[in-house]
Image (cartoon, rainbow, N blue to C red):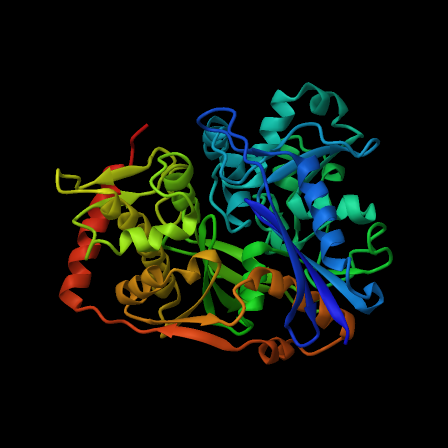
Amino acid sequence: MKSFLSIDQGTTSTRCILFNSDGTVENSHQIELTQYFPDNNSVEHDPIEIIDSVNKCIQNVVNDVDVNEIISIGISNQRETTVAWSKSTGKPFYNAIVWQDTRTQNICDELINNKKLTKLFKNTGLTVSTYFSLSKILWLIENVSDIKSSLDNDVCFGTIDSWILYNLTGNFYTDVTNASRTLMYDLYNMEWSDGILNELSIPKHSLPEVKPSLSNFGDIDSVIKGVPITAILGDQQAALFGQNCISKGDVKNTYGTGCFVLTNTGTDIIESNNGLLTTIAYQIEGEEPLFALEGSVPIAGAAVQWLRDNLNIIKSSDEIESLAMQVKDNGNVYFVPAFSGLFSPHWDETARGSLFGLTRFSNKSHIARSVLESVAFQSFELLQCMEKDLDIEFQNLKVDGGMVSNNLLMQFQSDILNKTIISQDINEITALGAGIASYIFIKNLNIESVGELISTSKTWNPNMSNEFRENLLTSWFKAIEKSKHWL
């Protein structure tokens, strides 16, 4: 049986999964990634550790299989995280600056005030934010002397997919989904924005060539030499693809380090009036790109890690559910996880993480429950904004990611949305999406083939009164407003 390999390089770990052609998992391996926090505003990864983890994961997965049966590789990656490396040596100039990093706020303030860029930025579908790659590139140019001195001829800037691809194949490419997360890519012309690059003195040759998501990016030249990489998708677009959200109006939510809701808008570029982002869903070589509306919140599963690593309230992440279930409700405690400010739909970089409603009655179970509920509340806001932008009402929500195993969270999500929640048999949808995309391209299959590899695992249905739901939401919105403008 032929198989396809998926490289899923995420914020907290690297995972490789080998799938059979029927979508079942044949083998997998995962390596946790070190998180570096040089100061209160900075989050970094070691690019060498990233590529080493990729190679080790691949090697572990293929050790006991017939590599001749592997016909394609797909890559999904944490988006916006930015690496700068030398063309001549292949070595990174600096640590990767992670998408959660907020050190570039001053640069973003300057970009916002540059009126020459306003229309150009609008064409990217994004808002000016530390979230995206552009300000990270400008910070690297300003603060790393070797980059500044080599900018004319020896610097490569790329998101993590480009860094992995460069090391595995020697090619300097990215795909349209990752390009659309940089604040430098024009969605209307489907190319790097010369106006932005020229205004900010970023050489175009320092950026990768942009290719459709499903196309041939080159053969891997190590570990499993000669296997082609035929799909690259940013992790959230890979999840959209893996959830079979290939039709206009399909919507999914991924619960990972952050929380990301995307809905397919077809070939239409929809500009949000409610704080959402316009992005590329995917593109098949030779076809028109499909677009999406996206709502992004930076802290979801990361808040559970914070309870574990910073507060020591739990010893392992999966303990949070049992701890939260020791109380019947949140005890009127609300947690706003604005550790990196607020993203969609608020876009307030001055907000900070906050706990509200604490009394002598409050205990660690109430805090644990408030952390879980914050994920559902944030997701509610994103879905509500999408419905307003599209003038539709979603009947259900497809979900994936590590937190889907938390039954308490999923039931509360269904309750607060007043919608049915649907999960799949396989929870690693991001990896599956990138892998399936590579397989579809190499086999020249119809995109509808995705649906044949997907089966529903579990559903959650709402069981909450409208009055109680409205009371909870009123308190949540009050907490959100109080967390803003802290800095």
